[in-house]
Image 1: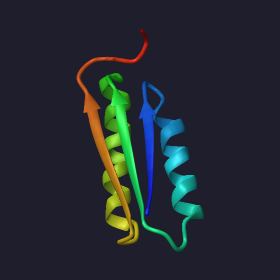
Image 2: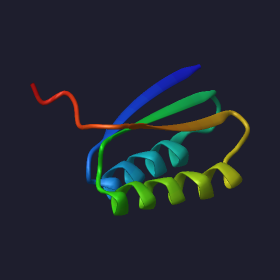
Image 3: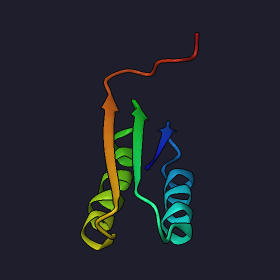
Length: 77
């Protein structure tokens, strides 16, 4: 099993592109993709949520995507 952690902050398109690349390359292993949104704007969060919800309907059983939203931006200290 491979666990991948992605951090998103107001750039949902790059995060979506990264997830798409992972989905396109994976053929044989179980993958958990953990996406942490670091208090992005509401529009960016909505784009990312919609993409993940659509993909959950389409992806194989051995790939899981989980989105966690942080209430405030962290990590810039």
